[in-house]
Length: 330
Image (cartoon, rainbow, N blue to C red; front, side):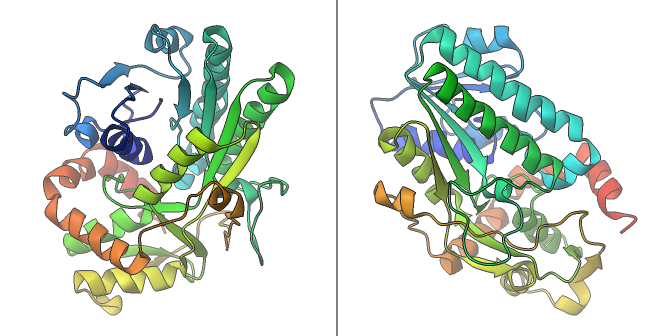
């Protein structure tokens, strides 16, 4: 798999090693700012796990990782933060589109039996009412969402043109342990633990559906093992919340007040107001979310509270500069 040192990828590897004793995991990761070796420190000595440092845009690095036969490629590697895509769109085009192309070509050369692209519900764009289904038109409204949609279209085109054994999952907003602290929940939790204000975008009424990372990883594994080729599967948590509601919950968990610890900032350019996805296809495979959102959020806050040694180093240096660039003028 690729991008296994990231948030969802590392949780997926941990799940596979724990529940599929007959499976070996090969992890190709470029170790960018969000690719953290500490995410898999507990399994790095497992004989069934092997790591390669390399960029998915580098065909030679991909071939090195595929030097021994593999049954499936699961592509987690991506630039994945909307705000960063607004600052630097080209990096997203390179990884999410060109990198996906390089992996698809490697799949063909190596005769890999399955290719699963991990994507996002953001490719559907703003959903004013109802729920997006897998066959709905793609309408991305950010450079990030557009780059992911481009990768998805390549995957489906390879399936149609070359009869490639491809699948796609599109997950809703994901939360849980080991998430890099630029995303809403870990950013807000760690800021509040540092007694800092949190940046709430616009009126805070944007709606997101929240999915625990363990449920997301389990959904990807279910689709990999049971999904039908040339199909897309939505994976949603069924927990819609406005960002304002979520902020209030995090303030309560951290013992902070709205008046002193929330700073309203200018909304993100092109910010989608609502995402919502229909997950009937994935449920038909036997998957459904297991984690209750209230308990999952409490446990997530507890994880960041108990693992300061993991996140505090991440919020210095380059992150501090990014944070200043992102929020100082808003």
